[in-house]
Image (tube, rainbow, N blue to C red; front, side, top):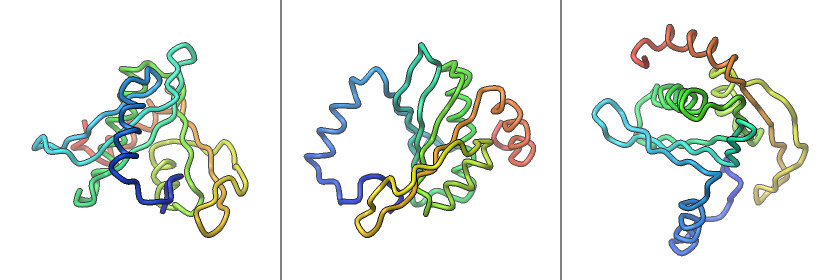
Length: 154
């Protein structure tokens, strides 16, 4: 409902997609684990450009993941982006009806940078896409606040 793909993805299509991203140097995928080392989400970086120190990101939390998993996943993912990948800027695109994701990105410190009007047809209607971004220097400040609010995430 909140993704660019609106159809059910079959096994063949999934395998073709995986073959494409597996060897794509502009793509990074990570399995996120909880404290018991059990998978509870996935984070990916796409359009990764080391020369420009920029990337887009996306994520999924497991449907059974407890409340707070998304925040921990976000902290870990942005640490990966700005510390290990040495990014200057991380970008996101969110379908405007996904108000939870918009709020989540703002909580992490992303700022709205643009609006692509009627950019995506969701199968019923055209929806706007919100472009957001965060700089490494902004993440340092946002991270400190999130760690205070979520002390178990250090």
